[in-house]
Amino acid sequence: MKTNYMLMSALLAGSLTIGCSKDNSADVSRPTADAIAATDVTAAANVPITATIIVKAGQTYDGKGNTIIAQGLGDGSQSEGQKPIFRLENGATLKNVKIGAPGCDGVHVYGNATLDNVEWLDVGEDAMTLKSKGTVTLNNCIAQKAADKVLQINADGTININNFRVTTFGKVLRTNGSGQYNVTVTINGGTFNGGTNIVRTESKNLRVRYRNMSTSNVSKLWEVPSSSQVSTY
Ligand code: DGU
Ligand code: CA
Ligand code: CA
Image 1 (spheres, rainbow, N blue to C red):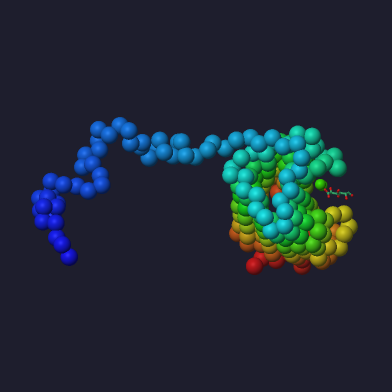
Image 2 (cartoon, helix red, strand yellow):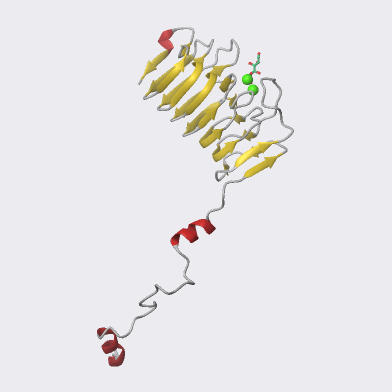
């Protein structure tokens, strides 16, 4: 190995630095960390839509914190027949999105789905409907201002609800009419403030398990055929 004695002695003497300036306090061209954050992070925005957003089987829609504003899909009232904002096909994931007013018919799920950090700012006819058999997991979601139902269950299913925060509602979860759906609901954590029921069902085949759930101003937590359908875990 050939040694460069000139370079070695300069380094040892501290008179040479490699690759950076010794004193950058006067280097005004170098952006601060704050400036980088301000320019690199895109501010959340409103995203107008005029048709349902379809998330195909197995795909993910990441809203990146943006707010969807629907036009022409419904008025967010209690009238039936409004269109959904999102349609999730089997195995789809919806995350990091806010659904603004009008909430229309919310999110329709066909099969299995995961909803992470979805926020309904003003629930429309309802927030989410299970349209065909599947397992739906909601993580860290928020729903506000639901005139009536939040989660509408129109099929057999497993509904896992983790840290859901709901303010002002009729029912957080409701099965359709007198349907005897086979449903397992698990509620882990979450806060539910200002409503009539957490679960209302006519189904004798629905089970609810819950823990660490905080409720305030809820008239009757469980409107179910038999109290034996509800347990902690
Ligand atoms: O009988 O079936 O509101 O799926 C009434 C209807 C009603 C449903 C529900 C839904 O319960 O349309 O959003
Ligand atoms: Ca509906
Ligand atoms: Ca409804």
